[in-house]
Image 1 (cartoon, rainbow, N blue to C red):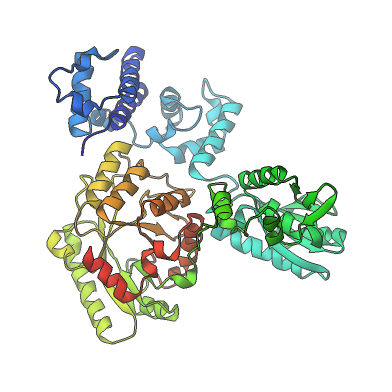
Image 2: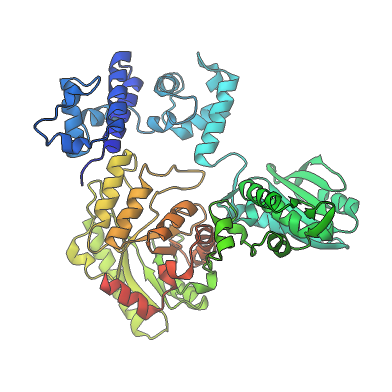
Length: 569
């Protein structure tokens, strides 16, 4: 693959940052930064220029012989020995620190020298303990900004995983419904839109006695602080950190309030603009023509008053759903009941690992037609254990249990982009899932080439958890998902939507893009026990936010169709 100008510029940028962290002179750092900018802005690919005898890179602004030779090497190999040398001298996680707003390479290096900060985790610990503000050149405001930056990057702070917010929301709703006179109680906001993480919880209530509803709410078990109480809105903190608000509304305004407080803000603003163009006014109390309320009791009525069908909460992000609704082209979103099997399951891979018999039994209870057992293989040494697992799978399939167990493997993608197992062994698998678990600090161009090379392998069927993110814990790999999705379409490789609620990888935007490119998605649990097969519903949440329909998801196929598809590939 030709190395693009943006990829060359990315390597030059990383060299500049590493040089600055290492204390190199201002002029040397600036030279690489300038070269990066020049290369990125070129209208002609460098990869073609170096093959053109009439082209001379030294004629580019700020590029001398030394930089020209380095640019040529990057364009030829995709990397630079100098970058690798500098990377070995700098703690691997320090580059992540430089990405926090307000922290450039120099400041990151200062924190490394003063406090031993080597990555985001150690930076978070130093900021939380108040040590950052004691370093020369820093202060309380900088420390607070750093904390906000880490929370933004890692998804920390007050945001909860949707799966962690669910029992809190259910507890609040159940508590409110226990009060006589409460007709309805529903959790709204980003929780209702099924976002992977949730901030404050908003609960809407219809109750004839609004004051009684507010008093009942603040008596909720687990409340550690009452922020506000009143006849229409009350706010508390529960479980020592989660803010929950309730809003008591009239039955006639229920639909408009539910739409308004579900959001998103961008979706609601677009609807209000649409209402104004029709001579209407839309707010949380209803849809009005002058002083007359024309809709508001149900969400369906609110949307209908604007000439639209009801739009599922998962889609309400102002990403084209209003136009699609107007044109009658909203997707028929995939549902949990559409799933016919799980194509990424592990057996007996740790103390808590489920046995093959346990997982088969649990999958049958779910009504699945098939599962794929995909134990990890990180090297050729894992081949023997893999063959033993396959023999056990063959014995299970011979019992005629009604569930087909596919012989699969989750094979490691090595740093070079090659796979950790021989083709001879992979050719005997029913399904090959490729994944990255090691050497995750590569820059974007190298990591992207690594992933795409693996996808080009003729035995790879699925790319597992494509960005490697773990919400609130691990940053995504530096990988270009646009290029990965294009390659998935080119090589007919499915992308996994890992349903583990801490992963949900790929995200909703990537799901939508994959759908637009005709790339199949596998919603899989990556389960290591029978209980974790239940993660599937979280993956379906993400799939629906990504506009996926039943036909976009590979594991909605019947067993025969799936086998035919895999063999055809």
